[in-house]
Structure formats: structure tokens, C-alpha cells
Length: 84
Figure 1 (cartoon, one colour):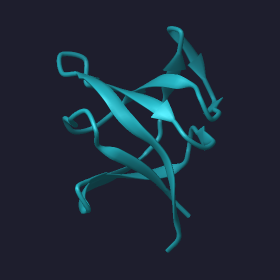
Figure 2: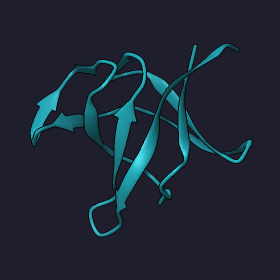
Figure 3: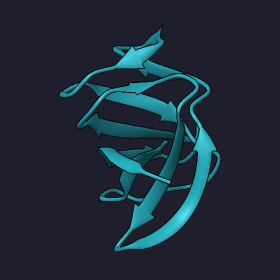
Figure 4: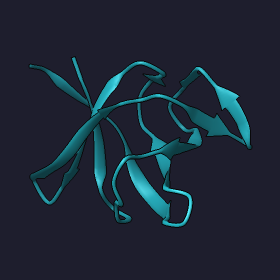
């Protein structure tokens, strides 16, 4: 199972369960992603929705900073990988 780094968490809003991700490579709704901290796998999930500038988007490109609804709390610095 190949994995590609798609970004890193820069902030997490606990009350609404949203992580802010600095995108390093293309990410789209429907992609399966994995959260990794210091080499340890935390959890996996499928991207169900994401926002850029408070608007829903279907995909994000390198350099975007997006909001992503996540199932579990994550900390700043956690890396995000797309599972292919």
C-alpha cells in the first residue's frame, strides 16, 4: 500500500472537530488518508468534506491551507498521508 504525504496539521479546533492542514500535494474528497505522529500511525479515515476560505471544495492543491473535519482530535505537527 503506497502512501504519499499530503500535508501537516497546523492547528486543531477541538469544539468543532476541524483540523487545519497545510497541503503539500493534491488532496480530494473521497481520498483515504492516514494521520501519523513521530512515526506512529494514529488513525485513518476517508475525506468527506473540506473547506478553503470557509467555502466547501472538492480538491486542494499544494500550498493551500484547508479545514478538514476529522473523526478524532489531532495535534499540530501531525503528518497526513494519502493511502493509495
